[in-house]
Length: 124
Ligand SMILES: [Zn+2]
Image (cartoon, rainbow, N blue to C red; front, top):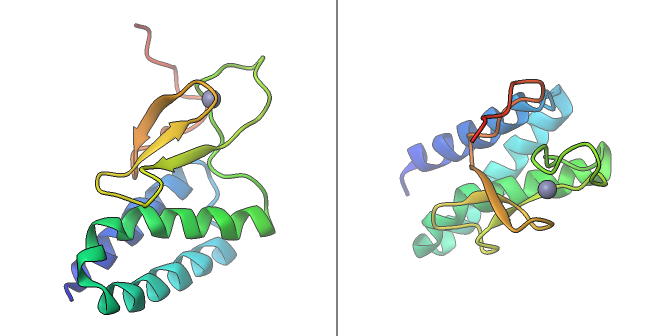
């Protein structure tokens, strides 16, 4: 098992937590737990490697929902839309996990590339 895979998964999810200023010590420790348990999981099933990063993101999302609330929130739908979170697609966690807004059906960002609130939205 290549442990760089887990370092990479940790880095991607941490980047998204930091983008939304959610990386508190408690949350980072939930991330460490998620990485450790998915490491165990992937050791049992090496073909599962491509799903690891997305699954870690989903684990952290679940942990945050219990502790702090929804993460990450969709910032793409505008201020009129009710608050709603993004979800990892594909549901299985990979390959190539992206954050998707299920309200609008759009892929918002690759895992690890969420934007921070306040930054000007791209004008297209
Ligand atoms: Zn949305």
